Every structure is written in structure tokens, then in C-alpha cells.
Length: 245
Image (cartoon, rainbow, N blue to C red):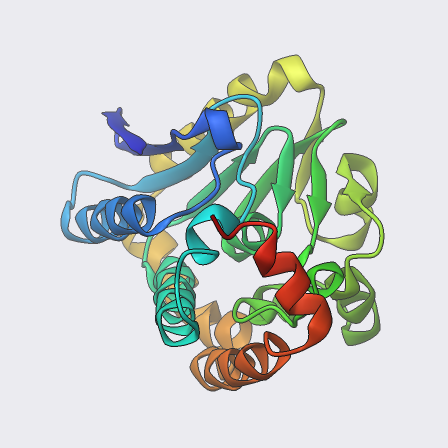
């Protein structure tokens, strides 16, 4: 479900479900939770990179899995994903999102939560929850930390994709590179961050945690409640039925 490798004080976490564009199911989530916990505990790890196995970064929640669950199970799983996203923001080490291809739905929020986002000319960000008939059940705090509220609202509606150049302009991405230079740029930035004193890097991230997280736990709980309500709508049920065997 994921690949985990440590190279010169940098932990590389690779989402490895390319056949479904690295959509996040409960099994992958468990592996990701373990990986981030390992990064927190291992003092030799100074920087973390999250990326997806080609051709995508992450397609968000696995709707094929959600379609087999009841509403209580869905909301419980989405609450776990919310906590996982917050754990990235709380991890006292820099986290880089290396975004190839699509970062849509929860995949977009996963990228946006990371401290540094590297996108390519063809990277595509899009919040798919509203078009599916519900509000996102977690992660809006990541948009709030990166852009003004009016812009975040437009992005959250998800009625149009945001490609790499616009993502850079909006603040969804911090760097923009040609597709074939993504890995090299990721290595370069990870190496630069790993080369400066870890104690001061980590202290700086702690300093900005409140500004970036805000009341994320409260927001996520409220979003989960709204998500449950919205999933009862005709539009939401139609979406879920497409993934019910």
C-alpha cells in the first residue's frame, strides 16, 4: 500500500496503489499512520517526503471502499483521515508533498497540509467533494492556512480543476517545475532542509503550528457532522450507489 525508504536523513513515503491513482482506503491509511509515527520517533529522520506512485499523487478517499460501508463506518473512517492529516501538521519535522498528476479530493488536502508543496506544470488539484454532493469531511484548515477565505471557498467548491501554474499563484503549491524535474527538485529541497540544524527547523514549525492548524480538530468534527447530513441527500446517495456492489 505504501513504500517507505530513508535516504540521507530523508524519509520517502510513497503511496503505492497506482491502479486506482493512489486512492486512500483504510489499509493504506493504517500504513500511513504508522509511517508518520515512525518519522516522529526516529531522530535520524530530519525531513519527510510524501509522493504517489505514477501516474498520480492521490485521488482522495477510495469510494469503492466507502460504498460498501454504512454511514457510521464511513464517518468513523473519515474521522481517522482527519486525525492523520492533523498529525502531519503536528509532526515537528518538515513534510514535503511531491505532486505528480492528480491531487484531488482528499489528495489535494493531503498535499496542502504539507509544509512545502512542489507541483509540476501538469499537476491537477481539485476538491471533488462538493460535486459529489457533500462537504469535505476534513481538511479545510489546510486551505485556510494557504490562501484568503474567498479564494479557499472557490477552491473548495471544486467546480473546476486547478493546474500547476494557477496552484502556484493561489498558494496551493510553493514551487513549480517541469514534469521531468520533479524528483530532482524534491531531492534538492529535502537535502537543503535536512542540512540545516534540526532543532531550529523543528522549533520554527512548532512556532507556526497554531497559525497553520488553528482550531482544526473542532473544524473537522463539525465537517464530519455536516458530511453525515449531506450524505442523506439525493445527490450524495446517487454518487455512493455508483460504488455499491
